[in-house]
Length: 134
Image (cartoon, helix red, strand yellow):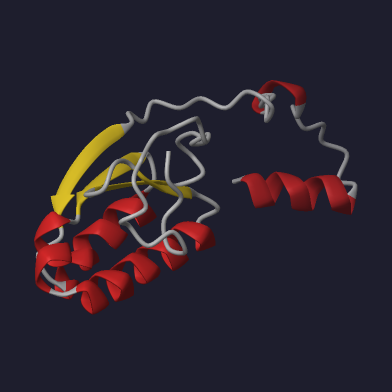
């Protein structure tokens, strides 16, 4: 239907096409977001537990709170590997990752909000190279 009218316009068949009434104006600057922001909690017991964490981050509009205590007590090498994987995914999404206390990591994609660093009094028992502490 639309292509037929376009063909008639281009061929110059003399028929006028009602173009003004068939178009609507879209405001691209106005972003309508009906999406809710979810806070999802996860417990990191082994390395394979990061798959649902990564999926939640990739979906967007999720704040991910990860309890790392079980894996930290069992295998620190696996913990570093898991945090590194989460960190790479968050950086690819232009998000933020931060440590909250000694046993909690918070990660957000860029769509949610920025985490800003504040003043803390936390002991240096968590590896500082993988997680930003608050």
